[in-house]
Length: 199
Image 1: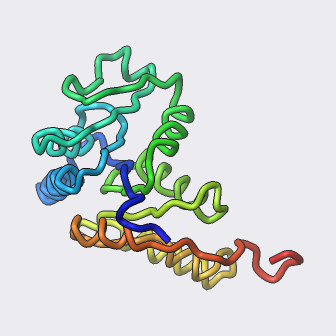
Image 2 (image 1 turned 30 degrees about the vertical axis):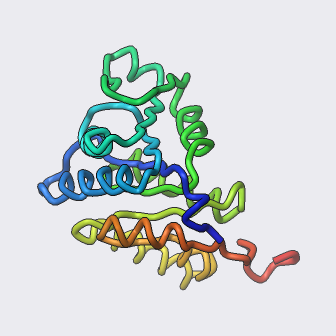
Image 3 (image 1 turned 60 degrees about the horizontal axis):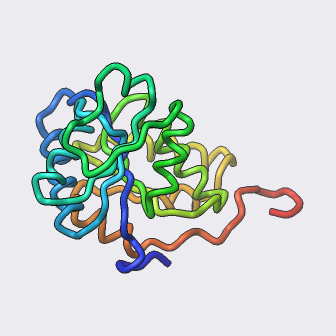
């Protein structure tokens, strides 16, 4: 079980755009502030763009530690946030994601596009495989992640995943509640295979 004392750092995946509603930036700001006030390290993609910049700015404004992992291409284009506590430059996106995963004790996805969704599903897949198992949550602003839940429900109904793996994803619209639930999270104990030898 995850407990408060061993949740030291959180990786946040988020859009490099702001989204169509100001509620998205406000939620990112609140999350960054909350992470810093709890004394957690924020690990994120290292740029100042979109919601990525909002969550980092908010954590830094509260005196929090913010670690940016940026890939070489974005670094060369001058996208590195200038005020980070520290940063690392990864050779490519795969290396960047792997390093964020190494540094984080849990993951939170803010609303975002393809990159955010891909990062979310990769983190959830690694947890499903216990490679390693770390809590994965979504800040469900404006019900942004409700369609993801519907898709996972469909995957369960069609026999492609177990309900325990659908339920391991933690969704909450309030940053405080989401962090509380990630701290209390327990990994599922079932295997991924359904109706097969060794399942």
